[in-house]
Image 1: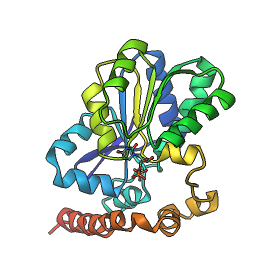
Image 2: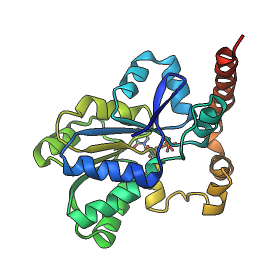
Image 3: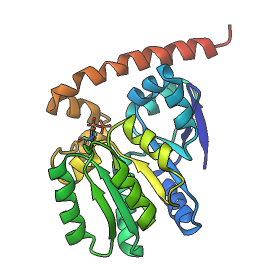
Length: 242
Ligand code: UDP
């Protein structure tokens, strides 16, 4: 897998198809795999939280989830192939799980979302063995940990938002051999609680704007983007021959 260093983080540079095949191969070879899907906000958080930076640099793969990361790759002359989002990877792995009758654990989102997700999996992906489905507002995660130990799922989807989901995965990674994927609001999108931007908007790289307009409460989080852009510009200047 081709890797490009961007602001000291090792990003996967691949097509979605290539990345998906690598994950399937790792599933077949029973290799434990931790995938972090990062946007500028996560990179900025990691830059000011060294423990978190260490944690994501220990992941098996760090993928460019946000268009801002692709932009940074271009600016810094370490271009990345394309966005590899948590949501698309999640949908692909569900399909694989359906074909291969995999055991899957779902953890995160509100109780009504996780209930709707379980229902949708049962009807649309009947071959998936649901190892467990837990909402993300439990007072402690012991029941989830016990379930992982007892059922040994092959896929673990954690949708608690960042950095909680990556911290949970990091702490529990040795409990089962699986693909562990932190996927933010993907359960909400999957169950229709929030809508993803139409394909055309995704194509013209304005999904972030769509999400901001449809959910203005996210505004504060977007402040990370101009800060990220400034860091990229500075890194570009630093790299330029004097
Ligand atoms: N969430 C959760 N437990 C928490 C906080 C958040 O399960 O303690 C869920 C929340 O319901 C949502 C998901 O985490 O489904 C991610 O939320 P957000 O939109 O902040 O994440 P993003 O996709 O932007 O990373």
